[in-house]
Image (cartoon, rainbow, N blue to C red; front, side, top):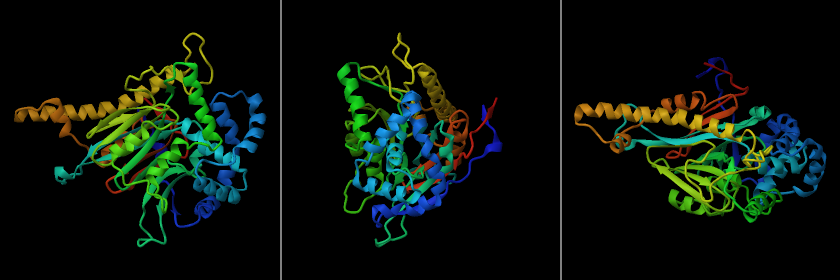
Length: 410
């Protein structure tokens, strides 16, 4: 199935965020440019409540409580950044706090990394590129997709881009980000592993602590590994070291995809555990588990659980969500397997290679990565944007945003 060409993606607007400015000032130019669009999103809070399954009759009460309780994020720097945005846009801070702590629970995505080499390049220059699509049902957010380039104007290299993220105006965490030697993307996970009341309590209590600013959201944690704050030495770690830090952290259930250009890792993350998949050729993740978790994942997360089937204890529609996730993963994985088989067939004329050696010698070009990511259903009716990140260079090499939902035809 192919995506209709009449709805081609457009480039993401790029804004510079100066980390040498006071946090309150960093996002003011962006907020001024997007003031009306961000302000028009204030009604999305009720949509967020609906997405996590809260009946509409409770929305007014929750809004009142949120106005009183959602005053800050866990990070003082990020809180100050939100206050600067709220001042410009003239909206209550609680709406931005909610946006920044709930958004990362609700995304359907495809992420991964693949070994690439351009025509004419020597084989030793091959590198892995990080690909990602971000899918969500909330179409108004399509109008506020931006690329943020982070600099330090008072450094020895004031114009050097230290890190970049593809995000939404008004959101200060990292959902898709890159700096030299590290790229990261975040996928929502529909299930969590708790199998007793204590486990459920810990999982949901963590969400409450994040909302109230007592713990970091997962997108804030990822930001700390991508965006370099002055006088905070939280970076320059290897992929293995970062994985060791992230896997046991208390977070929501999610899939974290990390790449340094030489290899890539998928962390299937639960509240305080993480199972690891890694590859130096190809790896991908969508929104379902590929590994066997203990206890086995069977409980829907708040984002997935709107109504409950009393017999299976799974959300109605959850199996459909997981099946759609498997289809997206199979779509892009099948392309890689086909390429590996092609290399293996070609090698038979020269004596043949085993499967592992064939995969080691397989690569594609950047233009092919873009083509693969842009194919349906990897890119689909709910896709807001697709990006290609180059962690070797620390750059976003391509982003296509979809201002309106795609349609598809057989």
